[in-house]
Image (cartoon, rainbow, N blue to C red; front, side):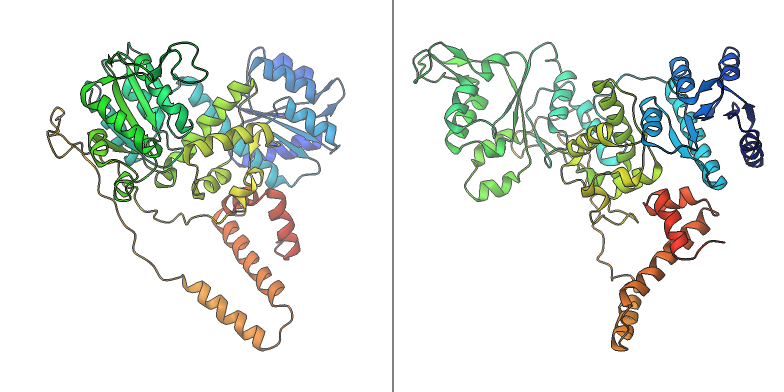
Length: 501
């Protein structure tokens, strides 16, 4: 590993940091001014650069700009005794990894430098193995089953029904099915049947002749004609009006249809992929969806897991979306701390992957620092009730089902693709500490204690912080990250609760 460079005109700061980092087995090189650093960069490079902001013979902000122009991925920590808004803004706008005001706690500074080193090593690994943006991401078993299903369907042209909650990526799967099919040379046409008014949907699907209705001044080709030779993706098929379902069934049965106002039957060679977030079996029972159309669409069914069923994919997806947002906005990609990732992994994400992508775009614009901490997350994530992280239930795997009559078997599948069994977690009794807390609260309330809230809250917070500090061997920043609070918060709480050594 390369050395850490310390740049400060104050010899005592250089000495203290060098000794502390050497004890932590880091190699260190010190400089008294920016000119020495720029000269050294011609022949060498640091793992992390720690620089004062105001020094004789040069500014830390100018040095930051020079270093970033040569090594954009190098983490730079800016130190200053002048903790003003302009300095902080200039540091972060220049791409600083973090801003460290003086005087600083030495343990805090070392922990921050250690985190910057870890980030630098991750950057080196990422740069060493660049890869094109993937179509879809997912390491969870449920997503691997989806990928296998797409692969096995790659040479098939059967109708596919994709089910799953909103935001799980149904259109991405449909595009992947098209891309890896024999129809890849043809068009991929998508239409959301729930987003188009009923009176216009028929014309959108099948087209219309000139004069078919008021405003129809020219003949218009519908989506079925536009998708000839390719794939037509019908999103939210469960919301299609009942009378249009009959016309769709006819097209799926014999490939023929009429434009609105037309008398000449038309044929279109189209593969249909449908998707819905609704339970179509229930819609059939309610009389809102035709049973014969359901069976016609349900040739192969592919269920996409919700994001809460694949929590282990959240860190990978988060980093991918942060990078994507940064490229779209033309800015440096935000990094995210392990504590913030842990908080995201515990959130249920009712909007699934789409919600996570929007959140990453929000963080790219709104997060105040280059490294996203738990405190930087929006209120709906940081303040929401989050799911327990211990032993999450296994995600129900996507099921791929053949139709009952006349199945179209795939190679080596017998007409069905494998699906993992869903695990249903047993209902557990509340943890015992809650019962203990209730008994202690009752005892104090019965005794007339007027400070129950403050007393128990202080004990609760002290217990959490002491436990986290024990696990992290006194490293406050890491303890704060594990607890999901900011480093300033844990420092303040330690002082308020009298936990200082």
